Image 1 (cartoon, rainbow, N blue to C red):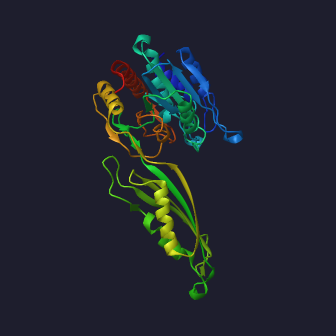
Image 2: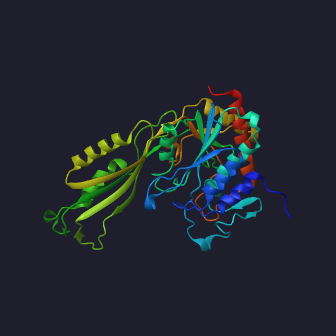
Image 3: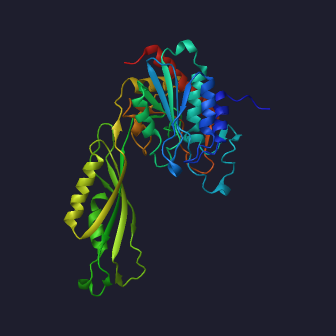
Length: 384
């Protein structure tokens, strides 16, 4: 028999064994609700949406007064993918050679378990205020009926925290490397250009949509849109696919389309980028249509009380002071920034969404120790 598992690692195992692939709850929120209720939290399940779009979420709070610190995360996970490629059961939560394997180990059931275990170790008289958790089941999906709705609900029901930590896996290599204190915005476009089919030997009798499509894509074809800011690198735009569907080499096609994505900093907004590009498309001319999907505006949490709290706690536990960064994709922090100051700090994310996703059990315990240090410092120092 091996050594006893810590509370954080054991709870992570129980959460991984819940097959909570978006949009299915899979028992993960129920597991958390039981754990938090036993720790004195008042729990509320917050389902949003209807039918196939219905998502279950969990809000839990202990205490009614300030100061109020919150933790946010998600129990939903991406699909397993090629099950046969896994060397460990993706929902088995097996520990081997000091690593815990399973879907959600890195992203981000371990982070949630680490925070819950940290709260469990905190003496009752050390938390003179409130602790809450916003846990969604819709981070890996369309993010329509998850955190964005929970934030609206929390604001309307008197649950606005002083600050929030999101437990996403922010560290590229080692626990204590990086705190995310902002994220870029994301804008996707689907551009369709109509032309007139014809023989390539008689181009004057046709209208080649590919020519106009390529001209329209010039500003978003592997381009930097600005020089960056003090907190962000340059905004970047890339074409992700061009589709014509024309098997013939001697036929000008009648239609061509493309998709592209822009990751942009606070120098831009989605509305501003859309206006700029549609003006450009119109100048190229012809028959075209475009549809847009904007699911994230950029935000920054300026260095201050929250980032110092996380940095000091991480340095106290790991001996390393994390770098502040705004790189990477989007996260639910983009919604929480409308509620309170928010920053992200969690485990090493090297294997998230991969086959044999895994984390070091020692890192789970290390993260839990950092969260506990954050809580102690928060309640000792109050909120500036």
